[in-house]
Length: 182
Image 1 (tube, rainbow, N blue to C red):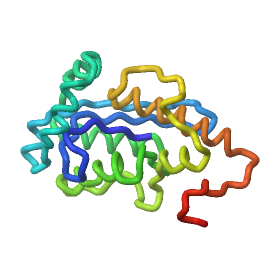
Image 2: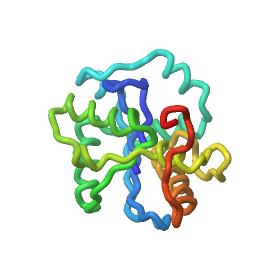
Image 3: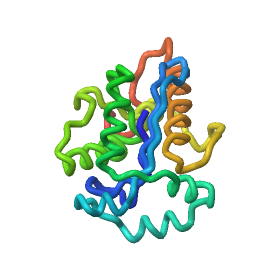
Image 4: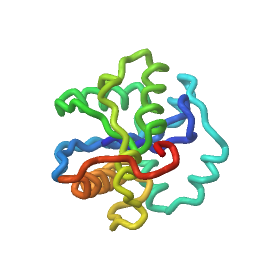
């Protein structure tokens, strides 16, 4: 499970923290990764910042703000560390919270750095789709850790995915009625 903290919501935005956790669908969490990233190093490679996201960050908890400021590394170094970690886990899939956010934004960073993402494009998975299929709302689930800490968020997203898988076991999987399918 991959989670990013960013200074924008579009591909090409600066990433200021990356967190990830290896897991199985029973909820066991294996190896974890977290690295904060210097916003200045992101600007140096042409990543952008959205003033509205800066304003949003100013409204977040002191704990979240403090956590993203610690031990920041240049984006090139953080990417190298993350890619090495991902390859060492032996993971086949990467999960993100939404089909167009975490994975997509990290792949945009990879393009700027002219490196290949450490996963195959066909192995990208999306948490929000799984939650939608089984009508689960993460806001109603018990939350631990600091909101908007990349590693804490990744771990919580694993908890949400495992709940969806448990709800779906032994059932035929069919999309909820949304108007799109009928």
